[in-house]
Image 1 (cartoon, rainbow over the protein chains, first blue to last red):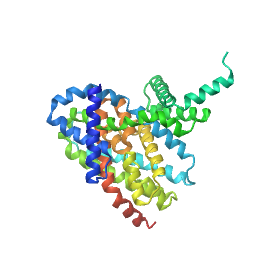
Image 2 (cartoon, chains in turn purple, blue):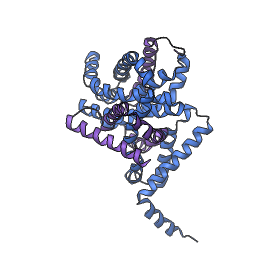
Image 3 (spheres, one colour):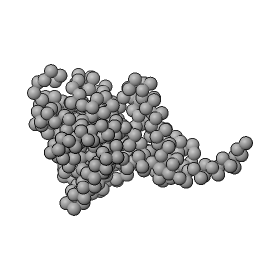
Image 4 (cartoon, rainbow over the protein chains, first blue to last red):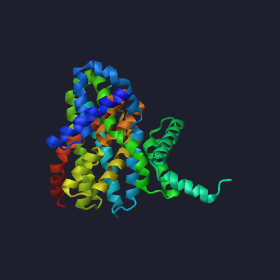
Length: 115
Length: 246
C-alpha cells in the first residue's frame, strides 16, 4: 500500500511540476494520470505492483468528493435569484451531453456483440 | 455522571481537533454506503449525495463551521489527487478495446464536450439567465479545478461554477441508468464513457460501482473532457453568447 501510494504521489508531483512549468490549462493530477498511463505501457511490472492498491482507492472514489461537496452545498445557500435558469441549464445540458456522447459513440463504433 | 458543562467543554475540545471532521466524513460515508446497499445499488441512492446531506445535517445541528469541519476532512479531500492519477491503472487494462475504439471515442468526445458547453449556455440564457450565469455554467461538465479556472478567466462566478459542477455530477450519476435504459444502450463502454464526459469524477465514481470496465471508460471520458473543455470553452462560450446576442 505504502509503495503504491508513494508512486501515485510521485506521479502527481511530476504532473503538477510539468503543468506549472509549461503553464498548461489542466490540473496536475490529470497530467500525472497521463504520465502514469505512459509509464504503465512502458513498464508492465509497475502495473502488477500498484494494481491492487489503485483499484482499492478507486473503489472508494465517492468518499473523496464528500468534503468539497459539503463546502459547495454550504456556499450554495447564498446563491443568486436565478435558480430556475441554472437548474434548467444544468439538467437539460447534462441529459443532452449523456445522450449525444452515447449515441455518437454507438453510431461510430463498429458493430460488436453488445453494440 | 457527566455534567452538561463537562460535555460542552469536551465538545469544544473535540471540535477544535481535525479528528472530528475526519470521523464525521467517514461515518457519513459508511451510513451512505449502507443505505446504497439496502437500496440494492439504485442510482437514486447516490452515496455522494447522501453523505454530503448527512454531513451538512451534522454541521447544521452542531453549529460547527465548514472551516473547522474541513480541517479534518481535508485529509480525505487530499486523496482526490492520487486517486485521479490512479485512474491510469484501469485504463491500461482496457487498452486493447481502447485502441480498437480510438476513432469513435474521439468523435464522441468532441461532440459530447461541445454539447455540454453550448447547451448549458443556450438553456441557461433561454430560461432568463444573464451572460455571467451562462459563463459560470458553461464549463460545468469538466472536473472542478478546470471548470472554475475557465469560469474565472471568462468572467463567470467560480463559486457558482463549483456548485454547478457538483450538481451536474450528482444529477448525471442519478439519472444516467434510466436515460440509457430508455435509449436501449447496454454497452458498459458506451455508458461509462458518456458518464465520464457528462458528469466527470462523480459520474466516474458511480461507474466504478457498476463495473471496473465502465469505470475505466468513465475515467477516460472524464480526463479527456477535462482537457478538451479547457481548450474548447474559452472560445466556444463567447461564440455562443454572441450568437445568442447576449
